[in-house]
Image (cartoon, rainbow, N blue to C red; front, side, top):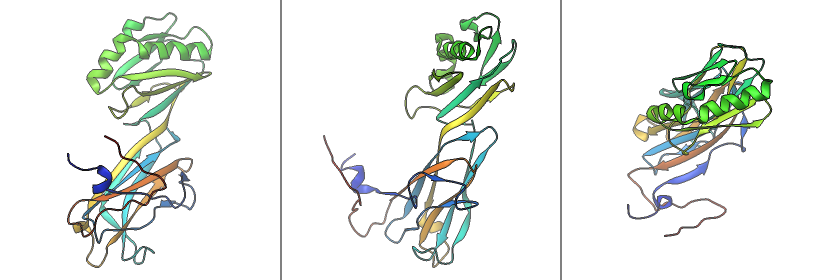
Length: 251
């Protein structure tokens, strides 16, 4: 493709301040308002952290008539929901007194606790302490037998015990696949560390007289969010100019 992406797309940090917590202001946060007068499309990309099981973050696009948010109202069809531990990028499993026959399912693969490990059959050892249990679970996840199933389901997974009894999981190839994890027992607690969402809209979806949009995030009070606004599409009335502190292009 000819030209640079930065010549075609306008990229802006959309948070009022970096890495906002969703609890302040209640009930959530709202980005700055961005003009679509000179762009036909905008996509908001957002990253959410710290979500316990069953927690949700609901994203929606808000339209207004100016950058101050005058007349702000939601666009009913422009919404997306992130649910903890479902199609996320990074997650943790905390092992506490895991018992034999208890299990956790990761991208459709069931990992069962037993008195002795059998990694080719996705069985991990729960006979030691919590840290040893976590290490055995990580080894079962990393085993070639499990990786075959993960790859067939969308991408390989890496697991590591970075601290104590906590197994941290992420997609081995960045940007390829996602994690969906279900714990079937209270002794293995799953939480989301990082989840990514996007909402894209065309200016034709705006109410007549409205030409600015913002992203609103409502949900898990303990979560933080980082938001990017990316504008582009046609028609364009002027060359894209980035508002950045540093830039470079290389071939």
